[in-house]
Image (cartoon, rainbow, N blue to C red; front, side, top):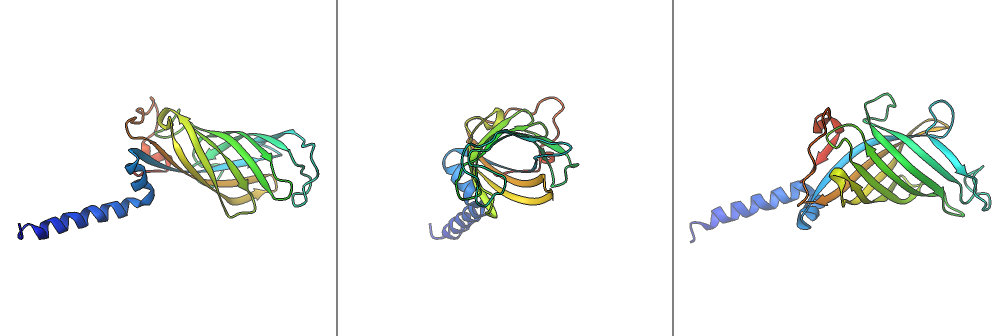
Length: 208
């Protein structure tokens, strides 16, 4: 028994090291019987000019906004924004972000976002992710919620870290989105559709 103790200690140390390497998010997902998927892509919100992808459909009936000139409480915009592999609009297309955002604060630059991420390239081609939440555009990093999805992201939960990467012009904002989605471990992702590119080409990290 005494001779086997060093071996037990070594095995325990290896298990602990592997758990730490996987990260707290992956460990939490595993503890819940889930699988954590990390996706990163860039969203191009173009509110005017050539290639416009965001159109205001409601002019808010509320008061003028004190920190967003020309905007009114309740302003609502519909989007069909391109998602790309890098911050460049000419980089590989990975899908579309389709939905709405509404100016939802009387005093702060806060938008209420509801959108579907429709993936059209990579291993998860054909799957979607539902994202909702509060976007305080004055904050460096905003956190929104993953509330579901389809295909490989059926019954997904998680969060999105949302950053303004850069402004290409007054009308073209580039956002960096880091999606952390946990999907049930008992439901393996469907195989890629015919013609889908390899998993690594979607710029994703699978942490299961």
